[in-house]
Length: 152
Image 1: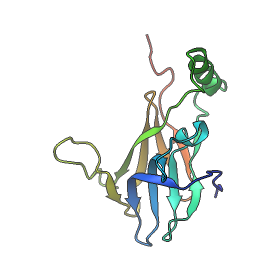
Image 2 (image 1 turned 180 degrees about the vertical axis):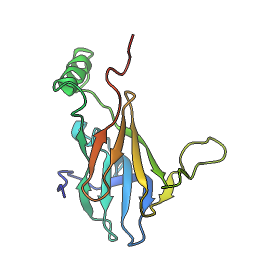
Image 3 (image 1 turned 120 degrees about the vertical axis):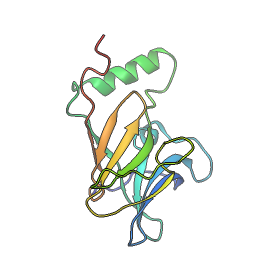
Image 4 (image 1 turned 135 degrees about the horizontal axis):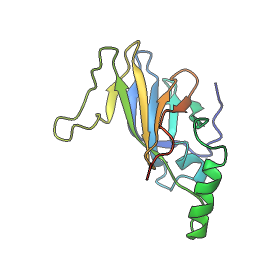
């Protein structure tokens, strides 16, 4: 487990519900409506227990990318006048063992509230064209995006 360093409670934007009452959430802001810090926007997935307490905050495993990948992203963003690269996760997707994904019929996007079933895989889609597989027990999100992202 990785303890969270978040300073304020996260606002729930999207969620995956578990039978024990816990959930994995995607946060878009803090609960008070303020903007997530640079760290928290880049780690905006949390496991909450049944009482809403943070169990873990996602840890990214980008070991399939160059070791300075995030440094380069942050430098580019800072050169443009930003506090750093803000590359949040945007979608949570539960793929059942048989390949089923509960999608919104109008948009074909995964629903904002999904239910975990055993042997499912959780995918996190981030900005910057990055895709991850999330371990719901540890909070480690393994980047599965092929490098380079843009082959041209």
